[in-house]
Image 1 (cartoon, rainbow, N blue to C red):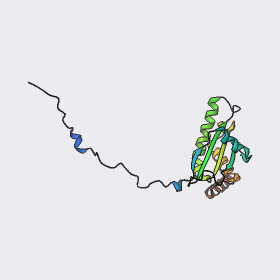
Image 2: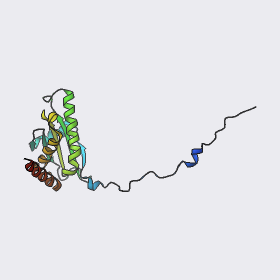
Image 3: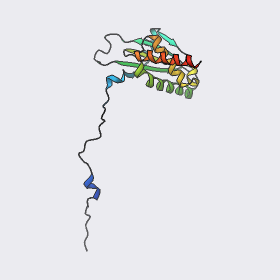
Image 4: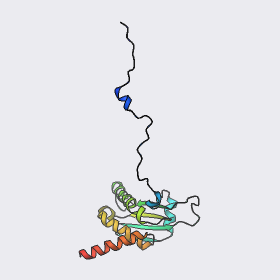
Length: 172
């Protein structure tokens, strides 16, 4: 008896959706509602340009340096953007501690800056020793306060910081 390899279609094959569209969200994201696009400062000259403005705010957990973009910078861009850089010196600790401090600062920036920072600025967050031990909620409060003091907070931030200040005063 002779046999040959014959492919038999699976019973499941009838139910496969070869040309079906992929799932689409009923609520597409609107990038204008998400705040400014955040990019990274990576090169040393970019950090030095921000530091040269000497506009900074020192909080217990970090130092925030700010520089506004020139009016004609990145003229090809039509949307608002914000650039942020992170640095932690060797004074803070060994590489493990420095990296942990940078991770905390990156998480802080990712959570707060899209909603509470105005577009058109370069920011540098400099980690301090207290960045490692300070509770995250206090780092959030420090950043909101720093944005407000530096004049780059959105109107939402002003309302949030006023509410948190009132709540802490009531608790005391």
